Length: 482
Image 1 (spheres, rainbow, N blue to C red):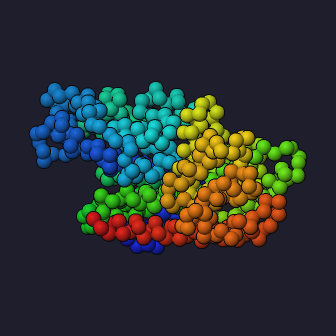
Image 2: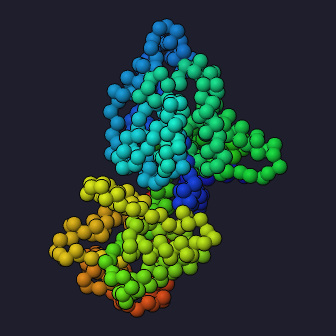
Image 3: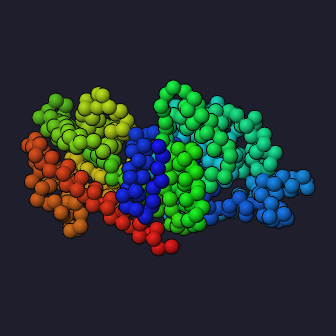
């Protein structure tokens, strides 16, 4: 049973965010991006594009106007491609769906857009991708870990692939059958979030309906949950679209009648994912099998154990791959997740070590995925004053760029980077370290005190709840004021 959620109702809004965030944390979400996602970057809508090609027959449907223009001898597809490429896109814009959501990883990305807005934002987000808009591209689908962007209506990079005329759409189910097979597979296997979609395209509706009909005619009661953010100024039309999608296509809808600020819901989803993601930053060159190494291992084990005691454990750990802290954290989680989906609770991210620039880009990508940062130990590489070159310190500075991030340095000893971070954090009375200074400054890494970690987790849960409440209020206030 699909539901309609009201973006101005705090309970509804948070419930919708929770559903999407959980699918992202489980790595079980695909995105379907319509024209609205590109228009947030000042790209032209379909009507504007057709007007650039042919100004006549203004009261006709756009696909009919495109068909008529082609019959009149106009090279519609090449003209459309040239117009799209002439529009300057600012990939630094932040008031968009893509800016907030493309920090995370998805099973696949799908779009009906001809432009290259998604590609530009992916590059900005330091994410590799493979575009699929020709059959010759299908050979790339076997690439391991490929971040696939399916452009099912073609691309301006190859005008001949563009689907725009009446004939193109009539022939679509024959000419693009392989794309539809893949789309149906993904719709059956993964949850989808539809963004910037008008759902005027019958092709998408037919794919969803085909799957629903298959399940209805089987003996199985199986359903994949799909979601859509519906932004429409006209309240009557908003209700119609939402009710139609929930009743006939089993799509859960979040209703927004503020088109200009609809993007802020993506900020809410992103915030929920981040506040449920803990980045562990730590390093220590322990002597193997030494007492100090055993202390370090117990600190990591106690930390992970305390978080995983939470009923319905909502957090996911993100860590670089290393011989000490990362190894201890990941090993503990793996041991505790024997009967659970470990990918839901752990993400290991080895650094590329190909260049300083590549390492910094990788570090930025990791930081953008998390909202809680825990700093443990940290060597100075022999020069305590040279913090700028220290990886943990750079991760700390990156984490400070987002005011909603919760930063927790465990002051392991005075010769550790985490201690220096703690000293820097308590200078600001608004930080986690200042609020809970008495708790943190009494931390002793040589004393495996489970009570300390239990209390620390309690404070983290409290602060993430406060932050999420503040963010929800901020979003609703933004949506109320048009």
